[in-house]
Image 1 (cartoon, helix red, strand yellow):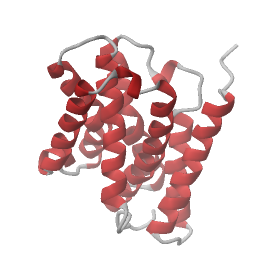
Image 2: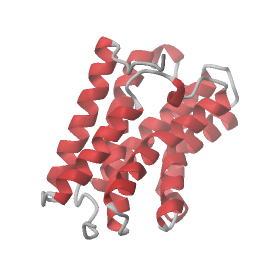
Image 3: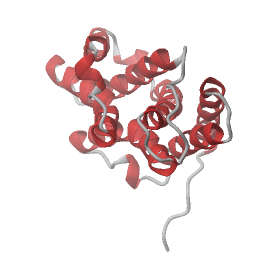
Image 4: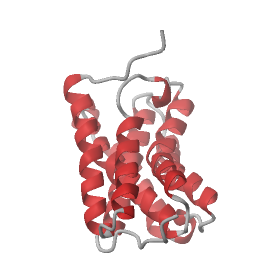
Length: 206
């Protein structure tokens, strides 16, 4: 088992907040597209933004991050308010896909880093990165009555897995956390970007 490592030193808080903002935006938009109230938009933004991180923290025995940090819930509520106050035409599906790709990759690497910090072994730590990046979207889809991202063939969860596994592997090889995080997040984003651009998908069961 590799020793606990620090979180991504300088970039970590910004990566965390960037991922949260993107996921909160996707949650608020899911409610907005169904012409729901501001309260529903706020709930969707919060549950999508913090869902994955909450499950991760509970599983690794860490304090639930957004309960201890008032900025997180405030950010999700501000995002919901901005979506509520702006025209729908400002939020194209394609633009959101690209922002989501950035958040997915960054949050997967961040989640793996936090798991390692709490002494989680390498393989479960990589899984915690996937949980961090994907569970919020799964909750959003279930509440919105949409097919879950787990049930789609597109390369989404796979991109998160690549980012988190890359971070764990690079850290185990002795690379510093900042460099490992940047490389891992870039790899995850590149795979997700390729999936968006060329509609890449895994083969289904026959």
